[in-house]
Image 1 (cartoon, rainbow, N blue to C red):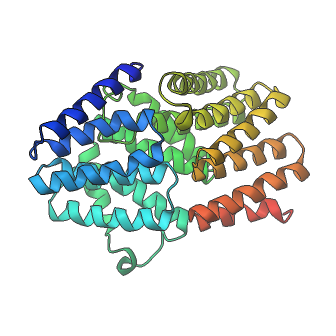
Image 2 (cartoon, helix red, strand yellow):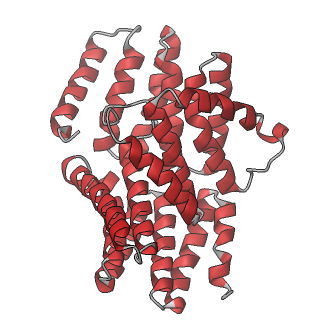
Length: 339
């Protein structure tokens, strides 16, 4: 995981060989695995589109990697902040394709994120005909599959804790995070067909800092959660240093800001929240820009500076709406109108 410079060199070599010695049968799988390294090193937003090239190459040869490429493409699009309406539309196509192919594993993996996207948009209660996906029936398949696949079960709990963070559901966040951390990272570092580990570390780190602050009356348990947050932050710092500041520096700043909030170093936290917001904007992670603004708003609110919190909640409201997360944005109005 730390040898990105060396791995990237081999990826470029493999892709250059593929151009010189074309192999229709293996092009899709080579591109699929190459993209996983590239997405750590090159600007994420541009590499994500390469998964569509891998999908097309796999379809031409009948390579089973095609559905995997489609799943990973949608996963990256959602977690990196691509406009939600487009992401949901693409997810529907992949879910229907996986149903046609009877690939229950891909459906089980995608459904939690699909449902989270619908909830963010305010469509979680949409009639069946509106999104053409029977999520209640598919949930049973999801449970059947993920109960047998540790990596995929971990991904399900990750989506739950992330959703709970965004919707400020502390008890749900704590329950999901306990399950998530109980599974551990065995085998996760090299799993390219589930949610990328760095997204997991970002959100599980943020949840850990939040829980640690909220239960500070239980010092021993609080310290355990803060230690988890610090461990996640340390791993993202390594990625920023060894792989790409473009992809990871904003995440580092946000985790550092939350850590300093927990340690009551408020002046330092202020600088880090602003740095997280600016780098998220500059590096084009719209959802993380929205989240950074919101968490900064909660920081100012919880430290007795309501008036200052309003400007951050206002920016979060704007950015969530820009992302397409209307239901989430509407939740912030209570912080804007003084209720």
